[in-house]
Image 1: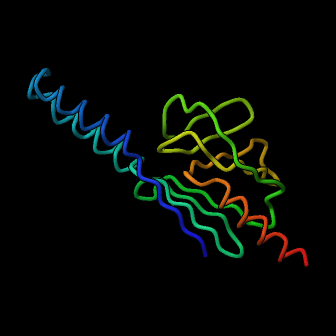
Image 2 (image 1 turned 30 degrees about the vertical axis):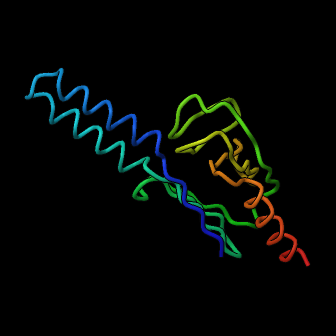
Length: 141
């Protein structure tokens, strides 16, 4: 089993900086709302965990409310990709959905039955691709 955890330091830094600045500039009665929204965003997007075992590629963001899993047998293709992030979290681009919390690298999955490619952010996409391909090769033999 392989497990990768990527921390969204940029998201954490931006939110903490924004909360600090707003703490000095907005009325105190609005501060609780800004704080609550910031905490929710942090809980949803502070990390991205990817787990690969002999049957599944699974990922979860933050505390796990945002997650997904794909059977290895349904992955038709996978490859490492670099991209311009234009933000972090969940991003929709033509023909793909991107889950990331940091950086500009991902593993691209083409999954049977999905009309969009799935990109999952990781600092080491080549390792994930190698592991998925090894498992698929073992399952085929």
